[in-house]
Length: 319
Length: 277
Image (cartoon, rainbow over all chains, first blue to last red; front, side, top):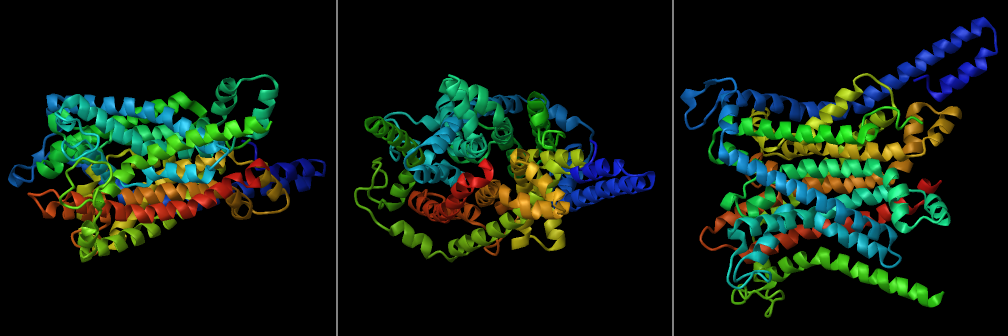
């Protein structure tokens, strides 16, 4: 981290002069650095203040609640109980079933979303006819409110009402068909999110580079893996990271599609049941903290895996 | 060369058709449900056989629903504008400037985006009641901004990393201050990214269900997804499939208009000369 270009240029120029002016050059260098710091802090200020106000206190409060026996139905019994809530949750089969269901939906869902998202991004980016039409209509599933889309799928699979419903069975009352429909609803809804972010990355791949690779005899498949993918890695990271974290908190779709019946509850559904329906804030908050820790592990794994491309890491942007 | 071009065009129309089917089949289904009358509602056909506007008449005579529509539009537009302004500033600083506490801020944004929102509902309710923000527009706008900011910061800083920064150096060489370099040189280049992010942020606000449900109590600030759920709960014994479908279609229209308007700007931004130099 030497200096800003201005200061470096100034220094190089002043080096040729006598000793007195060199000090002035150093002074300017420090001033420039100080100005940069000040600007940086000013620019992040508003965002930081809002995030702290809305998230910091509630996060701490949720953690505090998770260490207490806090059952709104028995307010007199409230007391500090250390990690007893965590012991209760972690020894509960309901929690582990929900955890398994959530992991299954997250892994299968995010994998399908990345594959179809990339295909859709390439179509939107490359199509030579009706480009605006394709791009606009591909945004429709993403633009639709999750609850609305979930109702559409639920009605479609409801026996006697829906066009997809089989004659003599109700898929939303059985475990595997339900999981399949939940994943279908999630993937249908979020492929455009992936595709939009990936397409924005594709737009930044220099056309000349692809042409050059083509001249050198690289097939489309090779151009994709050896030129495009390395260049759009930051876009892939952002898209996949956000989708995975979001998928792990899956709530709306399951809520509308099955209400968690037949053991199709996700971890968020179980936490919701304890917080809102059961009014057991201690257990519910402990579950929330566990969900939070799990998503933290997922995010950490992503950033480690992608290394320097992680947002906030230095060097990358300062070429 | 002519036949080859024609074949490629046909091939792409085929691919486009698949995308259109994927995007519209579930949407047309809910539209068609909203147009079915009581007699044919349960016939299981994809298209309505005797279309009627009964469901729409029902929801447009519901003043709570109309008020909720206005709330949704106002709250989401204000939250998006503020989140994008703050997010752009922060993302630029994180991607380009050297200042203390940068890593802490990135980590904090990540924490905010990761935390299960269900756990924030109880404490946010208590705070907003205490300071008088409960059941008001700012009471929803502020949390929406907070939860949109991590998405805005991450997406935009990924864009900022790909921008040709030599232009900024050139501007500074020519005597521009860092702020001028940001405002005059980099911001126009970043516009495609900013518009893409604006769409994502608006949709995430429009989509919210949990906060809208738990931080409002009357039609004063209740947005459509929450209003729809009350609307659903109103008839306990008979599921109001038709009205749910009609309400679903109505709240889909503003979003489609919004996407149509901004889509042009995104395409223009992405294909303009800025990126290719």
